Image 1 (cartoon, rainbow, N blue to C red):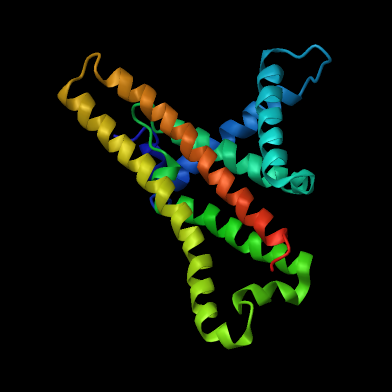
Image 2: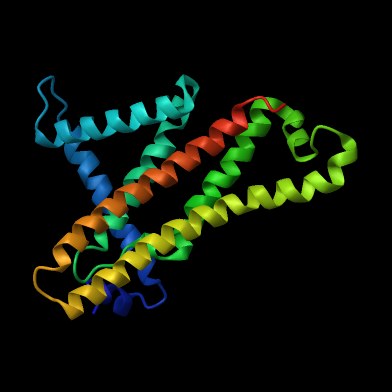
Length: 219
């Protein structure tokens, strides 16, 4: 039985993955509030942990996108923290991961997809659309379908990669815990935690690469 099943009884029209999404959001808001309500030169434990996390995310973004990518820090950091927290939530007995649902992942993937092209048009103007035509107008009938499929495949890939790894990992963990309920599932749990981190990193890196690619000059 789901740990948030009472929400389903009280609000039957709300999907369970939406309830868990709200739970993750409230948790991140609470952690952010506790870490920033009393900022000190000598940080406390909560502030110290958040400073390390934020600095690591900032360095990753600058190394991937360069200094001009700093304006996207809020988006990338929010996506990373949300995905990792959602992934880990599913490891707690009685809880599910919002990222084990295609709708949650597709929503994030579409945000990245539309932002990528909005940034591309904003930086390059109408010239951004020339990448879909190819180097020569004669190649347009071939290049346009290829480029359209290539770009549409990006949110599809982000959605199903995250969903498959998180949901598949939960299923494997449940099967092993059912068959061998004592110490054997512990190494699998550690491996699943590693997968949660890697999938968060992959989603963030691909998102940053797509946005950075839209800002670059196309030849």
